[in-house]
Image (cartoon, rainbow, N blue to C red; front, side, top):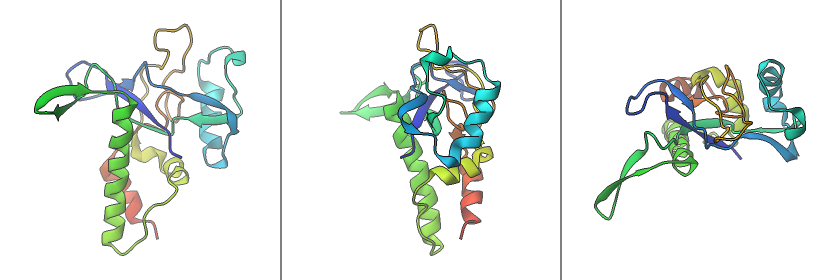
Length: 175
């Protein structure tokens, strides 16, 4: 599974820099151990970030999210529902956006006679620099503790938001 978090634009109404959406989930699993494909990215975060007290999270658990997409409520997606336009936000919006990017990448591969990407997570972490790294904000949701966005992977935004052109270039190099 690829876990998708949410971001928001840093400035309301301006398409530009992103920040972690404060209500987006993220952290470390108490059930699943940290998989090998994310180990170095998560350890880098744990060794350099300002963290909540250690008794509040499982530093050896699987870190999530893996990636993010726009999901914040200050700049929602505009959709038409029964001919009425309304804003849609949250990770219920960001997850299908990320799925659409992956669908376009798979469409690109299939057009070249290549198989679909399959299990994405190793690819995501191997090509983390092809995502837009989100380094502002946190997912504290008004609480005392949360996780800060930081360079590289973090439990507020994962490796960041997809940069389709960069990801397409990486996908084209795969067998």
